[in-house]
Length: 173
Image 1: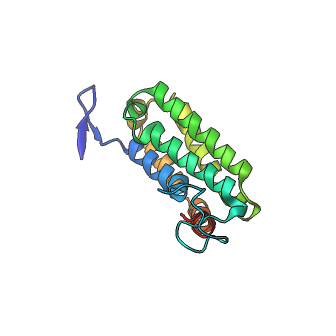
Image 2: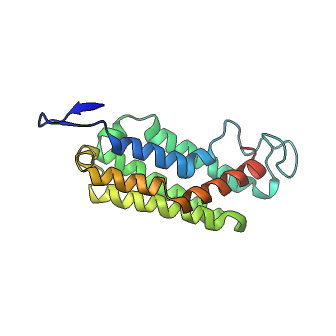
């Protein structure tokens, strides 16, 4: 699909925007999402859907807060995709919340959360290089390729899978 750039030349549909959404969701946020709350515990051990293991209730809540912040920050705010200042603020919130998630991560998933955080920080570094200006970024094909490489990194994908399993088993997600 092609769009017209301000200079009149054809360009690709914002691959950068697609990379952002895919990476954020694939690496961390989809692993944290839930319609319930961390306090919806129906029993110990987290074996039933919606059940939160009391041992990890605080961590589960932090993960859900990260999901809510990230979704509200740019998932539901189109200006974050077109306004560099809003995008910078969005990424600042995402990175801060991701660091908090790492700080609170149980030992069982600490290295997995670290791998996902490293991916988020690598993406943020790319965004920062372009001052969070998606219009500039989409004009540089290498940017989308770099973001896609991070989003599709096998180590991060494996870490994310283990994290999702932990969240399912212990946070009812």
